[in-house]
Image (cartoon, rainbow, N blue to C red):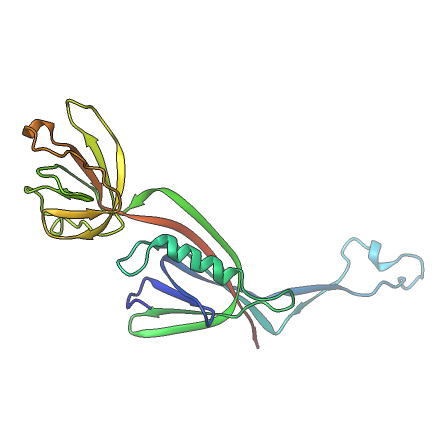
Length: 238
């Protein structure tokens, strides 16, 4: 589990996944059972008490609390694991168990230096794929040389400006051939001036005039899935 006060880890004994959370809510519910006094006739044996204007009820406070932990957060791209991989792992955790047995999940997070652990079953999980990448701005520049499956820009400072793997780069074309809007994923930051891509989208084979090199833009944020998870640890007896 990442050492962060904003990261919660779900682990079912086989699979574990980190969630960057923005809110962790403890929901306690003490059930009150309302019981009506059994019906009988009044002293004249004519009017059932149930028809009296103010029938008597007995409130029974049960000696336990029902607890739920609700987490709102994100699955984010990291160097070690993509957001999509985290989504698949969370779905695997959710699909565990049998028809007669719900899988027990361990939830761990930190408050300062203290590690908090709760065990229970996930009763609700909502995963929302966002059409944008969160965090950061965008970085624009112009290609200055050709190399297969790479973008080379001698004027860039990729690492300094926060470029990282799993971010998306777009080929915007140039004033002559117009916009292209082809996209690739960055799989390696080779240096301040060179990136390796999963798709060869900067394909010029000669050294054209500066105005004919392709322009690019990089989304500096990370791909994300928004998640809302409810864990039911059980009841707390009193």
